[in-house]
Amino acid sequence: MISMPPSDSDLHAYVDRQLSEADQRLMDTYLAGHPEVAARVRAWQQDAQHLRTALSGALQRPANPDLDPAMIRQRLKHRSRRHLASAAVLLLAVSVGGFSGWKAREMTILSAVAPMADALQAYRLFAQQGILPADYQTGDEQSMQGWLDRYFTQANRLPDLSGAGFKPVSGRLLSTEQGAAAMVVYQDPSGQKISFYVRPPGPKNFLLPRGSRRDGELQAEYWSGPGYNYAMVIPSDTPAAQKLKQTLNF
Image 1 (cartoon, rainbow, N blue to C red):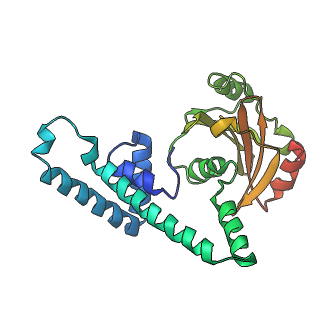
Image 2: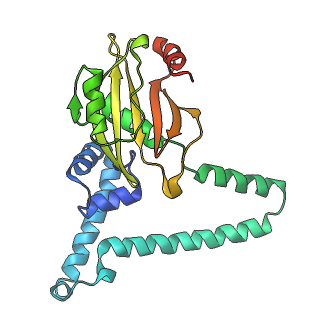
């Protein structure tokens, strides 16, 4: 699943038609609402077309990966990063002291990926905005558990949130770099939605300690079980939020 807002890698994949049909439609929707990004993408598309036209004779020969537009852009990007890295090393060499040490630490912290960011992203895209329809819909918890078990046989059972007035109503399969993920949306009689998210652990089988973090208007409660990472995404500052936290024992 592509990220939102899309990264440069996502945009390049869109230009080169390497996205899935669902991600391609998602990107079309995003670009329609962000003309400045759409203009940049159109410029890349024109560059790619110019390259193909200029190399039309060469394209009759066996494929040469070095001439692929995406590879050319990637090499330019890496070259720019090497120049920036060299400048950063020089800056750190001359900026000795507490201030430079603190800034280096801050950069390291900011470079780390926030835990379960994809769970929050999935909630915003599918539970809040409803960009794509659900893969499975039901008002029965047992049926929803059966749907989830088809794809995640060793995962934890779905949380029982009936005490807080929530029941599972829809499910959606998603993809991550580590494999398939799924989001189950719960809803209460007032229409308030929360989600249960399950995904494979990150690189090097990275499992999460039990934790919580807030991102804008959403709260993510996350943990790990055998083989999977989990998150409950809850809208913050709502009447149901505190009751849900008590139900989930967070």
